[in-house]
Amino acid sequence: MQPQDELARYGYRQELGRRLRFRDLVAYGLVYMVPIAPMAIFGSVYAGSGGMVALAYAVGVVALVFTAFSYAQMVKAFPMSGSVYNYAGRGISAPVGFLAGWVILLDYVLVPGLLYLVASVAMHATVPAVPVWLWLLGFVAVNTVVNSVGIRMTAMVTRVMLVGELIVLAVFLAVACWALASGRGRFSWDAFYNADTFTWAVVAGAVSIAVLSFLGFDGISMLAEETRGGSRQIGRAMAAVLVLAGVLFIAQTWLAAMLVPDPGVLLAQADPNGTAFYDAAAVAGGGWLAMLCAVATAIAWGLPNSMVAQVATSRLLYAMARDRQLPAFLAKVSIRRNVPINATLLTGAVSLTLGLYMATRADGITLLSSLINFGAMVAFLVLHVSVVVHHLIRRRSGNWWAHLVMPGIGFAILAYVVVNANIAAQRLGLAWLALGMVVLAGLYATGRRPSLSGLAPVQRSARDLERV
Image (cartoon, rainbow, N blue to C red; front, side, top):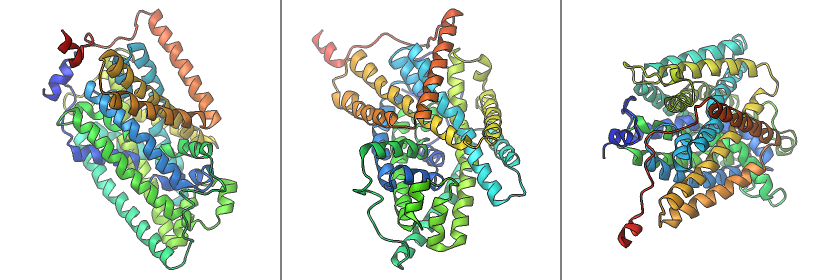
């Protein structure tokens, strides 16, 4: 069955352009995750994990491998944009899908604003003559223009940016290895395990911070309607991106942990200025390497990372609006560019407004990070439940490994991380969920009960058909 025919089964027309190949998906996912993402939050993860920063990222990879597997199962079942919103809505029920979409909006809508803010603050520190608000405006304007031109333009620009990030990372890895071999720093396995600080609760709390670096691999699922080769490509790309990025995250944080100039101070003070990684880079290669890593991180977060985040957010808004669960104008697609133009423009406007407001708060970056991580992890929990309900209960699948064991393990790991997450993030995240329930009640009261097109009766399994 052709990809457009798969979409027609659910009552949708092929409006977005299918122009992306497997390599485009991998590049998109890597850019969204940012291969050098740990540089920006290294100090927070280091302090939160009791110095076991590499272990936190390793546990994050393991946890999200199960999540990637669940995504692969659901994107094959429902090959369309919308990610967890569609998977929960069609796999469990439409109201659950609305709430899942509402929760993941906390992730997708806030992510671009956070990225723009972090990048703008970093660039202002590097070039003080240019204020934060002007950097924000510039980053948002460039990305909105590129994303409005079309998905192929976005893919081309992000590939170029990805090459630059990988070059910077390669330079750091090479210089750091040379520095350790030359006697600077101290070789140690403490970044993976330190008996003096280790507890699973500590590690889980650090993973809840480190998850910020992994967000993006799931954004690939938003491109299901713009991918050549159908849903199978989505699952393969998500797995490849997660493993590749995980290896890079672990390598750079392990090396940086061995080059931290004063581990005791970092553990006690938790890096309030966000410079811990760059301080380690300065130990390895001097001020030039610290500056290179800082500028590269700022540009990576402000341009390619936020560019693909805007793409993912606009596709989620488009999918929910297409189902009449958000205002209809967000479902408008540019005939010439085959992109959801209104959703793209709104995402840019919200990101700019949010970034400017959070720039005035001392806790702006910390607050946004906590909320984004909480929203993403709760959405992942719903994803795992969707796999079990749709495949095992509704379709009576006999594949217990794929449809019960794997999502069950993924759910258990993430639930433990959520329980040990930042308390403020838990409260604000639950408040957002409560607001979503109020909105859902409003939809029911106004006769707009959530519904999804093309929901066919549950098919019997092959095992049942053999009995007939």
